[in-house]
Image 1 (cartoon, rainbow, N blue to C red):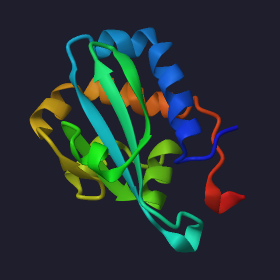
Image 2 (cartoon, one colour; image 1 turned 180 degrees about the horizontal axis):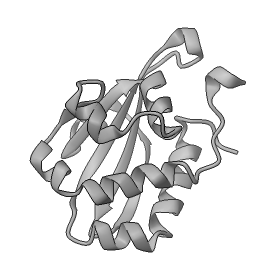
Image 3 (spheres, rainbow, N blue to C red; image 1 turned 90 degrees about the vertical axis):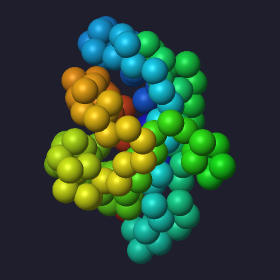
Length: 139
């Protein structure tokens, strides 16, 4: 079972994305890569920032994983939050669109485009729940 936010976790997430007919339909017109900045929280066993990356294109994920800061910052969209906020999203305790609107999840990129693809975004969030996950603060 992969630990969030490791490369193994992102690889398992990519498998879930590419296996989802719902995501494929919801994101059929989506063009744009997304980086997820999981900000360090040493007190909960996340000592360093982690950049996750997904190359999303027309309903599929062409690749991704943990990348360096430079690669993450070059993505068309960057979503950033502290580790514990991401954990809330993965556990279904925080809706990411509401989190963006409330400033709990910072977004760089065209927000109206993200909002237009809310069904695809919600499907991505649902798929995170399908990835069997170990959280570093629960080990």
